[in-house]
Each structure stands twice: as structure tokens, then as C-alpha cells.
Length: 334
Ligand SMILES: [Zn+2]
Image (cartoon, rainbow, N blue to C red; front, side, top):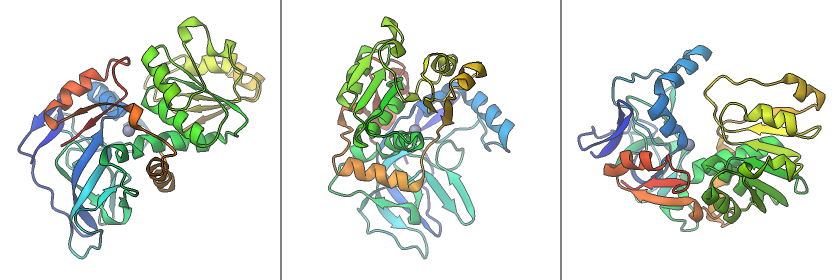
């Protein structure tokens, strides 16, 4: 079977992957489309740091960087066949799923693994109870954006933002864009995106931002006084800058993933009673809401899709995504 795997920090094409066999409760699916996620790029470049930091918390991930690693967690797929004693949708049904594989009592995220295939392959295994059929004739490419858009929806839910409030989104990469789209779908009337890249500011506007600002021309806080700030950049210094500049009572939702240690002045935050909320992923209901929003046309993801490659070209696509002026979301079609 064909696929692309992470080997020594590079995505490598393989045509000799073992065919997965569904166990009880599992379904074999043919991947139709899989988005390349910033976290995949990050793991390819800094896998050892990710594993070290994860191990410092609780146990860590059981991954050997010296062996091939399967990735790809933003997928849509077509049902092929169910495992033993397993009911599922008829073969040919287009589905998506939260990226989790249940094997007996073992629950494994489909994100980075030496053994469990992800969406950068012709076929993969999913969990029958988690499958969501793709409604309304939504095409497989758009459906593959359910996962990244759910990340934005979750951050917006965490913020408790109200329609009349001003929301500032720092960073208009795929996560910031997902936040902007979710804010717009929520009916928020003042959405401001900030990014150094002109292309990303343009995309922010087409995905629902009412205003887009270039931080090179001055702090966004000189122009707007947001009630809610979403940090979707993920580099050291941003959080402290928000605490310094934000108004009293601001809610800051941190959705950008910063891997370095970062310094903040708690004084700024206490002086203004700023509420800081970190946000990760989504729950299954939010994932389903995200699919519904795309399928019903509340969110049009098409402006985000800037590339489509085959499994042979995943490595080149990883390189291309480094340029914020060229790409937002590249999809892989096996
Ligand atoms: Zn992702």
C-alpha cells in the first residue's frame, strides 16, 4: 500500500506499507483527503522536543523517532469494510471522524505513531462508533477541514465571546483563520485579524474578519480595544505583550502552540484582572458541529485550500508550507 511517512525529519514516500486489517469495532477506510497540519510540520522539525516535553508531564508518547512515523489527522474517507462483529455504514459512505483509534480497551490518538496509520496513506483504520457520515453532498476535500475548523470552534467556545464584543485574533495561519471563521459563524460583529503576511490578512478578510491589521505598522491594540484576544501565533513574547496592552478584564485565549519557555509579567495580568485560558483541540460534539457548519454553508472553507498533492509529494508540500504568503492548507489526495 502507498503512503508517506516521517523518517529522519523528512516525509518519505513508500509503496510497501502493510495493509491494515480492521479488528472488532474498527472499520477499514480509503482516505479521500487529508490536510497537512502545522503540528505535523512541527513534529517533523522538532519531534524530539515534543517527546521530551510530553514525557515531563505524564508518561509521554511511546514513539521511536528512529523508526518510520505515521501522521495525518485531518481526513475524510470512504468506508470499505468493517471488522469482525462490527456494524457500520455501507461501503462507499463518505465519512470523517475525530482522529482516535479504539483497539479493545486501548484508545490511541491518530496523530503521531510508529504503528497506527494516519491519513497520509491510501487506507487506514477508524473506530466504528466515532464515524460521522458527511452530509449534504459536501465534497471530501472540504470535509477534511472539519478537524482544523473544530480547533477554532473550541477556542471560540472557551472564550464565551458575545456577538457585540470585539475579538482580536493574533496570527492568521490555519488556526487563527479557523478562529475567525468560528467567530463569524457565531455572529460576532467586530472581528479583527492581525498578521505580518499580506496574503494571510487577505484570507482573514475572506474568512470573516471585518478588519485586518499589519503588526509591522503598529500594535493592533493601538487600533482596537478587544474584549477577547485569541493568541494564534505561538512564539515567545506574545502573551506578555497582550497582558501589557490589553484593557482591564480582557479574556485571552491561547490557541497557538509555543514550544519554548516564555516569560510573562504577572503584574500586568493582576493589575487588569486578565483571564488567560489555554485551549487545545475540541470535544466530539464540537467536531460534529464543525462538520455541520461546513456542510450547511455557515463556513466556506474553500479559500483556505491553497494546494493539493499526491502521496509522492507530501515532503515537498511540507517545505512549501513554510512560506506564509503561498499557503494556508495543503490537502493530500492519496
Ligand atoms: Zn491539526
